Amino acid sequence: MITEKKVLLAASQPEFGAGLVRALAMEPADVVGQISDSGIRGRGGAGFPTGVKWRLAADFSSPVKYVICNADEGEPGTFKDRILIQKYSERLMEGMTIAGYAIGASKGIIYLRAEYSCLVPVIEEAVQKLTDKGLLGDNIQGRGVNFHIELVRGAGAYICGEETALIESLEGRSGMPRNKPPYPVTSGYLNKPTVINNVETFCAIPHIVLNGAEWYNDLGSGECSGTKLFSISGDVEKPGVYELPMGAPLMDLLELAGAEDIQAVQVGGASGTTVPASDISRTLSFKDLPPGGSVIVFDNTISMIDVLDNFMNFFVHESCGQCTPCREGTLQLQKAIEKIISGEINGMEELDGFFKLAGVMKATSKCGLGQTAANCFVDIVSDFAVFHGGISSHEGDE
Ligand SMILES: Cc1cc2nc3c(=O)[nH]c(=O)nc-3n(C[C@H](O)[C@H](O)[C@H](O)COP(=O)(O)O)c2cc1C
Ligand code: SF4
Image 1 (cartoon, rainbow, N blue to C red):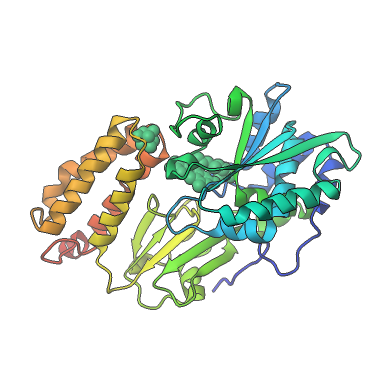
Image 2 (image 1 turned 90 degrees about the vertical axis):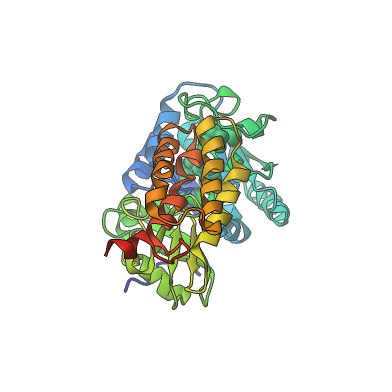
């Protein structure tokens, strides 16, 4: 069994600012190179390589650039970023300042989930502390580098966590995702090159700068680098936030959290993957079960069709309604679920059209919400006993 490997949550932490001081002694391009070599991929869900993102923004010539921290944390079951901000907001800001130095930005914005009002004083205090220590503000460490951080409260919508909807919201409009390209790295906030990263991604940066790319690579397992935080909840004895090597088997996390009676595990939130108990040897990695922040365990007392109903209602409610496949597709899937619950649909053969619809939603929706909203439908209907006769396709196939 692979045990917890604590870096971001380690009891003994490097001094705040040590990573930034080390970064400032390097050329900005070398900082970007080190982040690339570390293999770190974004911890907000999509897993885009952070070094590639930073390099694209750094290479784009512009006198004004921005660094944005996505602290919207709206995925159901995710609470790891809240813990990081509560305990390590100075580390987060250190990571953002390193990003600013690396890409040539002097302004950072933390976009904080509306419901996290308790974190506002924590963030404000950290900004003040770092400014007093000469680690934030003008002429950082006497090196002629400026970086200021502003806190902006989110708009209270899940879609505002999508990076281009977040930018729209920051600019004072409704949180509706933009067409891509252009991507934020060349045309983001106020149409300037913008790096947007998740809280956890920024928190890892100072550790990488201090300990090196190879060290970070070695923390992971398989072909994955680094560690990953998981917020685990549901039917477990010890819910909470755990840090494991990226690429660890799901069963390790379940064991740590004390999950005994397992019917299903949802990895990566409502838009992620729902697996039956027989699949818990699969790995938490971008190649297998893409790890967002959330892992929810359902025991055998839970009705999985009710779980699905709950998640689809969430997507219907949170779709911004801008594009047809997502707006109408989520409604159609919601109706199919209602028919399964009422017994009007009672077998897989009646769901062919809905599986095709799920494929269309994935292929043609404008943003990640619509592209992934049908995942829970496909997984739960295929692998669990959802029909009135209690026969899942899984059992029926055998
Ligand atoms: C509907 C939706 C909601 C999202 N919510 C979040 C969020 O709350 N936090 C986050 O970091 N990324 C969220 N993302 C992903 C962001 O669009 C973006 O990929 C991420 O902030 C990039 O940071 P990273 O590369 O460090 O992961 C969301 C994406 C979608 C489609
Ligand atoms: S996929 Fe859904 S949430 Fe995304 S832009 Fe289209 S309607 Fe809006």
